[in-house]
Length: 335
Ligand SMILES: [Fe+2]
Image (cartoon, rainbow, N blue to C red; front, side, top):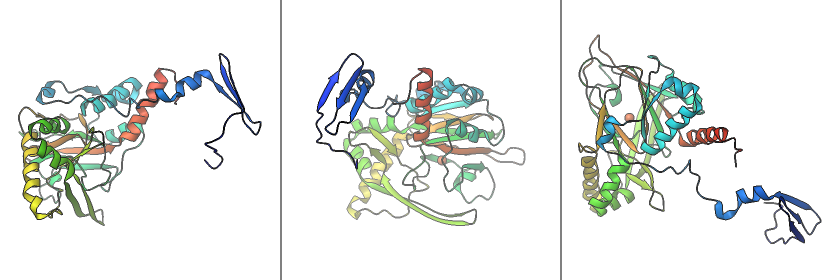
């Protein structure tokens, strides 16, 4: 930009079948292959298909149609790795089967893409069911449908939950709901509730001590975030991380709670949610800002405990991996 003159006019411009040659006023000569110019022509600069996938919204018919991938294939086969990320983009939910029954599988998948997204929980987090837990996730009580880390300005995009040990008793099922499908329904059922959820900010906070460090994290955002053109950007919804205060005019308090209640009711409709009990070695992967997740209560005994390892990956690195694999398969250079 320092040396750019946007008003410069070439002295001479000549084109043949293969090359455009330009002579500039300072006698500098530039040559551009016609094929390269065709690739770069302005009218062809459409949106990157990897960054803007065509999403397919789903209800409880997904119960029997969850895309499934093998852990070994994702680790050793580029096409499988690509197709798994693509399934996450399109459906927001995919199962990875036959992972080892021990910690570390999440790291292996993260390394296949690039790196895991580290949060103040660490690069991965362990969810053990334990009797005297301070974090709700570590108890055996029901966890309502939510998105993770709503108190972050940049919450993680993709979440992985690896079932290392599962309770043998009843309970401990994971619930999932396509928040974009529910929101799209709401847009038609009650446009005013949709407007409120997409515009009125909600406060989230997390105050805790973890590994000797004291945190007080805060962020506020509307429940449903849209891009200016109306496309979905993200959902932020978490009962347990919603702040005890509501920084909105008192006249709006009833309105916002009524809207959130309606959203919550839609999430829990039978037609919208699915429930699966992960078996040991299965990894649930989902779009943390689209697919809300929850967990039913379960019983912990001396012989029946539960251990989940979780981690996050961001779309930036996942989409980069998809592009690189596509370019490799098509023998293309990155544009
Ligand atoms: Fe969670």
